[in-house]
Image (cartoon, rainbow, N blue to C red; front, top):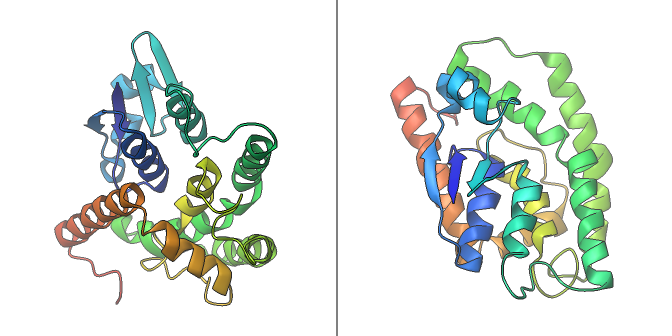
Length: 221
């Protein structure tokens, strides 16, 4: 399977982590987002939306990280990442909630407070305010859900956890305001004890550190 990706992307992180966790081998094909390679004509023929991750599995081309994660989970006989019965419906609900609500605010702040520095572009204060507003609106709901739970559905991680945690991948660099949410921070720490998630996170950090060095930037300035 060919995985068109940039390891600095939180969404690519979750696809890579799920594949590693399930023992699925991928051929990673680097698409440099910081150089705009996702807008190159050749890549747009593969994915007209110009987004990574994109997966090619034989004659099947899949876009959207949530869909790719489910494709992986359904390609193995059985996995706790994609439980059966009511637990699966709960996982699907939280995956949808992540896409519709929770993953909206953090990417705004990542783009405005971090990624725009690579482009030398000015920060849009209105988008920063909106990103913070969305975090303040939705983070308390996830924080409450995690009271008394190790993971979102129960004692073991599911695809929902990876879908929800992906936007926290740049939490330090973009200074995402999650300090008030102790349950989210503890849950994120537990996820980082899972080898596949931790390894993909290390690749993400290495990728961005190299990009910062190349651009002469320091994220903590």
